[in-house]
Amino acid sequence: MKTNSKIGILLLNLGGPERLEDVRPFLYNLFSDRQIIRLGPAFLQKPIARLIARRRAPTSMANYARIGGGSPIRRKTEEQARALERLLRPDGAFVVRPCMRYWHPLAEEALRDMVREQVQTMVALPLYPHYSIATTGSSMSDLRRTAPRLGIAIPIREIHSWPAEPSYVACLADRIREGVRSFHGEPVQVVYSAHSLPVQFIREGDPYVEHLHQTIRAIEALTAIAGTLCYQSRSGPVEWLGPPLPEVITSLAREGCRNLLVVPISFVSDHVETLFEIDIQYREVATGLGMRFASTPGLNADPRFIAGLRDLVLTELGAGG
Image (cartoon, rainbow, N blue to C red; front, side, top):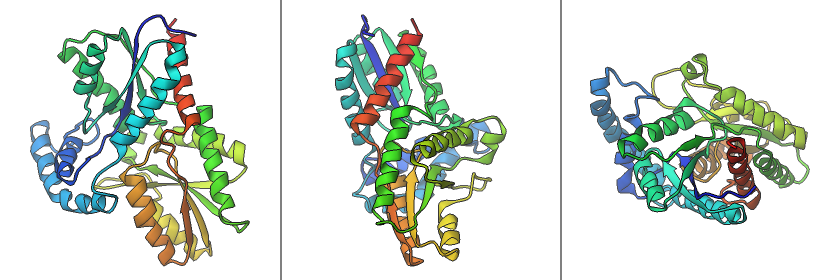
């Protein structure tokens, strides 16, 4: 299909601090989101968020310092946006921009950019394959609030999830095969790592875990390599999805596992959870237990992954008639 109107594509992502001085305000924005975490009564949400941000900032800053002083997620998302815009040129007039939830460019900035570009329709495309109220849900809600507040009446079409998108699955399958080959025929345990969520979200109907399993089933249909699912990036005094990745590493070491391949399944670009938590923090756990550790690289602007994003956009627009 070829579109006749100018279409804006918003790539929804979390965002991240680009400099160490951004860490504290980024954390404040994150903990101010009452849709994903309720900090006391509503009128105390922001004061408590400010307190948490102040307390957590030193540790978070130290983590970001170890990966170069900031998150690369804006740069990586901009690279994905440029690649997708180039790929969509034969299909019509498209403008593709990042739209971050907790750091720049925020929804207001991205929407104003779309107005300047004079787009006639927008497509909100989350860079979260698996739907959760804490990620896609929060970003979509933010867009729905921000557009009318700015007086923007451009229609926004929403893509909510794509856990078994063929190009996404094929990219992950290729990376797993390459990772397994790097162990030169020795037995390897594949571990899928996803961002953890409070269990309460799942009890309330969030499809995140089922979407993760859909992705794993699709990957393993291609690779015939079995893996186990675990979680990372949990914090706070609530019940979180488990088992946590560090505990899985320790358990596998006790069982005699010597080769470990970690697959960051819910992340499609490099950021602190992959570059620090997996590649530094959890690598140190594994090597300290005598294991050989490897992780699959981020999808970032892999051409086949970008082709999958193009397919998602064109399918959504085609479905709209």
